[in-house]
Amino acid sequence: MAEILVTTTEGIPGQEFEIIGEVFGLTTQSKNVVRNIGASLKNIVGGEIKDYTQMMIEARDVAIDRLRQNAQDMGADAVVMMRFDSGSISADMQSVAAYGTAVKFK
Image 1: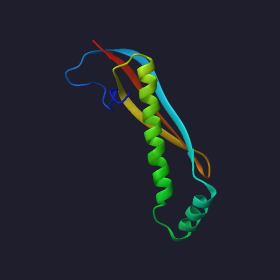
Image 2: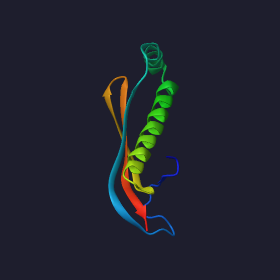
Image 3: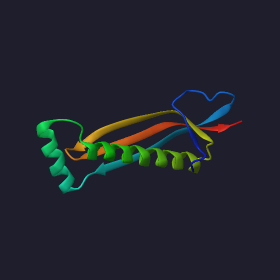
Image 4: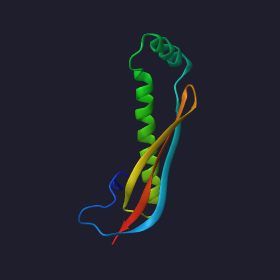
């Protein structure tokens, strides 16, 4: 699956391709209650909440992996114009979507 090229650009230098369609990778992540308590305490004094930063990194990686799998299932060689979107579902849950256009090299 790692052989599926993912790029944020519209084109790939030196490659001609045909568009297959839209692809997505979605995930929702949450931290456990102990880490949520720690994050709440950190919120009082301010600063980066490293557990939540790590959660978002993990969510991003899962979303990209699922995007690649979706592209591979469609027979794509690459994904162009990849973007992320994220949002809160509740105080301790984050959703991350990776999306783009699956393409097949000519």
